[in-house]
Length: 100
Image 1 (cartoon, rainbow, N blue to C red):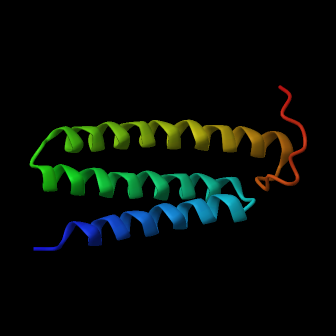
Image 2: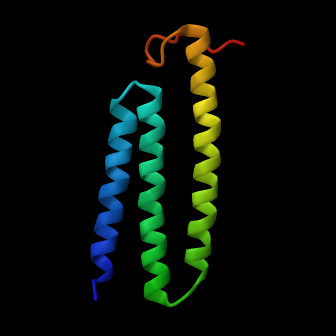
């Protein structure tokens, strides 16, 4: 059986990788993917603690986080498409106004 701290380390590595990608990249699609990686890091820790504590509440919360992440991805990609149609770029540095 894999110890709990291995899952926590994996969760921390995933979350830090996503945070690093979100902070350093200026491409909107890469930033959305980095947020998804951070969500997955949280999901790994929730599932690990749920299994360790023998409680199903963490696993239910994982499904809720997955649903929120899917909605965030759909809305985020729709906004990226609208920004690309309006500004013809998805680089965050080149988009200097957020007016409608």
